[in-house]
Image (cartoon, rainbow, N blue to C red; front, side):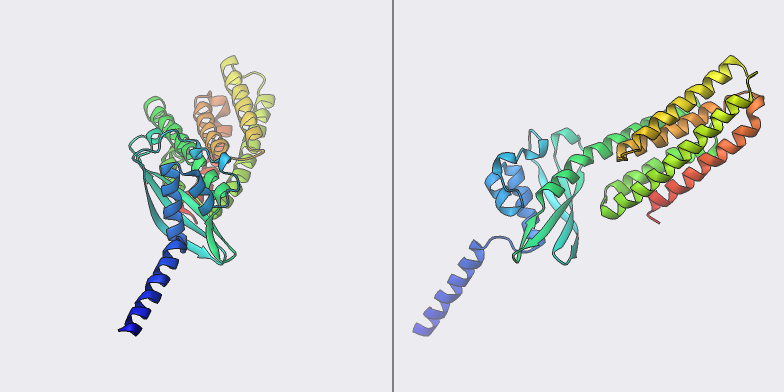
Length: 284
């Protein structure tokens, strides 16, 4: 009996030590971290993450976490780092739709901790992604209602793929960011080529109607402005530039017969961007 009691005491002590040790796996750390964020417990957030100053915890910019729930999804562990797809339901600033973000973790001295800065950046950028998608969806409605007869297939395809891009945003990660940067570079090249071609058309056709010349001049201005935004590409600037490219294509379709040959070349340029966007949205 004494041996049994001693064993029980040892087992109890082991369990107590394990309980006091806190969460150990990336999943457990992530779950505890988000619950601490929801509770507004800055000390616990700091204990579970790389945050070194509790005064810097601002609730990730959210004023009201009441009623929010966090659910973990796909987990990827790569040596001393991990990332977990995280779904947050009930955020007041996000309406009825859940917000999907990524929780990043690092292993330090044998313990998993949430990478606070990286995780916060992923969280705060999500509303930007969603805002971009709403803008693209609104633009799609405008295209269908105002330019359904004159829109060429490439412009329509760019609008269609914004919905596919939205799906990929839900699983945004480093690989997607690299693809986005590569697409931004190619988009910038396309805008430059189209702007140069339009400028040449203006120079070669001084007798064009004032209305056509104005359309071409405005197209050049818009393309060049968006190229400047792509100097330091963001999801927002890429979305705006893609949308501008489609809008410019629609305006060029309304030019007179004098520019028929140019229109064919310009449509081909936009089609090439559509093909690049296809690879981006499909993750190929």
